[in-house]
Length: 108
Image 1: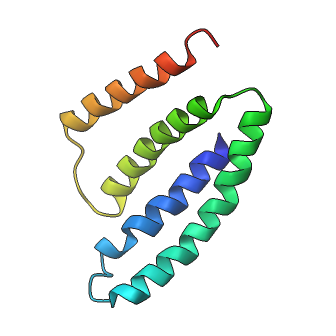
Image 2: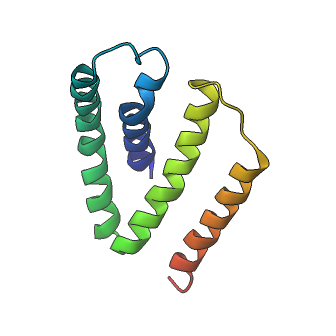
């Protein structure tokens, strides 16, 4: 789980860092920088998924857990880096996603 959190921090950064202070950079440069950041994400996500799968998680469980983690990480990034507020709609969406997580893990 820690590897998935770390990988999501890198991927969120790779996708969204340029929105704050990087909009003046040429798009090809932004893409190259983002690819470099995403490489670190892959180096964490691939072993995280292999470890999870080896410990009995299904591919579906790994994916839905990763999506839930993505929302948690992005919420922090949105507030701390992009300085955008969280609204009640974000909480509602998060609760719905946690319901999806519960459905995937029921009976495990």
